Length: 219
Image (cartoon, rainbow, N blue to C red):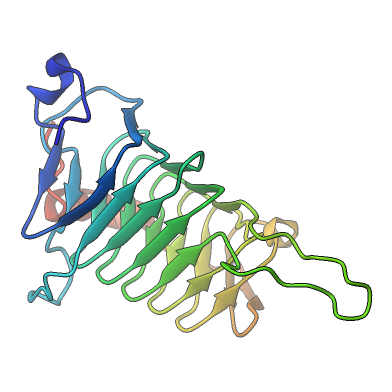
């Protein structure tokens, strides 16, 4: 797989841990940050689950941009379609068994983690219409996850989702709209997700050094 110029590739910025199926690689990977060895880890073991199903898959036909270190757990399915744009901020993270499908635009902020068995999908996949007016709904809409977001397990993040900074999403929730009007430091959850609690945030400062060590952040 040749996705980088030699001067970048020789520093080995991407590590693949275990089996990954590279189905399509006609797209582009851009690292918009100082190049470090192993700064992007695919298939890492940083959760309690230690066994892999060996079903990790990467389909890259669009643009995948990293703003710094990023980490993917085991058995992640990552698909960026042609003309689509997907961006990970510093320490952006997908947990194990997460499915990310980007057909339009998905941005994941700094220190934002998507919990295991979640899905982040910016498309309805099929044409949907208003049966009364005949009007078609947009097939896809951008998604933007704010900085310092803690997305719990089995969360569905759907088209039109925008979360503020310092947002926590409860397990088994469905996000499908702009939540930034609710302000920062919030807990949202439910189907669809709504405000549960204000003045609520994960204490990232306490965990930062531990997370860097667990996710093999080389400096």
